[in-house]
Amino acid sequence: MIIIYNSLTGFTEKYAKLLAKNLGFEAKSLNDYKQIPKNSEVIFLGWVYAGFIQGLKKAERKFKVKAIIAVGVSDETETTILNLAKQNKISERELFFLRGGVAIDKLKGFKKFLLSMVLKSQYNHEQQVENLSGKKMEINWLDVLQNGIDFVDEKKLKPIIQWYSDFLKNNGTNN
Ligand SMILES: Cc1cc2nc3c(=O)[nH]c(=O)nc-3n(C[C@H](O)[C@H](O)[C@H](O)COP(=O)(O)O)c2cc1C
Image (cartoon, rainbow, N blue to C red):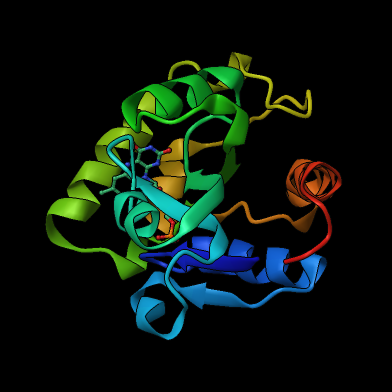
């Protein structure tokens, strides 16, 4: 198994490297796909842009994608996962969502504008939201818009590590 990531501002890359450390695999950027044998079994991590998991289609063309980890800034809820599964036409069973972060200083132009729209859409409902681990979130999105934020947390990889352990049980130990 190889961990392949596609990251714009670095949060997805951070998660990929943490996951690689936990599972004992290599993490490689999708940009380096030529160095990776075609049809390798991979865990793919991609950042979310307007609901689309970036690089997923390309990864699926080149590799056998066994699990998909979307990294975005939405609430860590079932609804987010269901919406991502629907929009990206994937099964929700193999899909995980992790909240990455906002690096406002690394963005410019249209992408910066669009992200500010995404963040503004969070303002109204975030306070009532519980994330997947049952923790209530209180985030000042106005502050995030100005200063950015990093939500990357190694503990959030637990369900993915569990998924991999179940995957091994069901598929033997080669790979
Ligand atoms: C233009 C743009 C659009 C985005 N759209 C979404 C979105 O639809 N849903 C979401 O959860 N996050 C969205 N995000 C947030 C990013 O997915 C988030 O910042 C992520 O951590 C970026 O990962 P990266 O640092 O690996 O590039 C968007 C960010 C940008 C810049």
